[in-house]
Image (tube, rainbow, N blue to C red; front, side, top):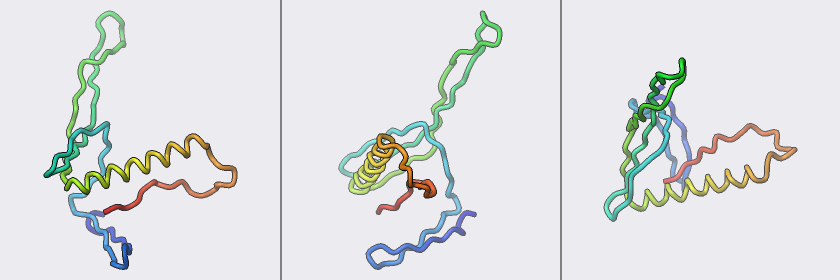
Length: 120
């Protein structure tokens, strides 16, 4: 499917064509770290994998031996883009929190939204 998905979207009257890079992939993340300075914003996405070990005293019981923090992808961007993405994420988080507090609406039979929108 890489490279084949095309979506046309208009922003400010200019058509934008969205395609997938052949190296495009979807990853799950446990968390991120990174930072922002005057020259660069960066976010490193990671996935924590728990490695258990068997307890010697109790048959079949396990305990945590270590956590393997596997770095998935590092993303660099300009400081303004970093701040725009941070705001976009907070807007989504706040909207989600409001939905949780208010609960589902009786007349809302619509298909659940993926919560995906575009910025940039």
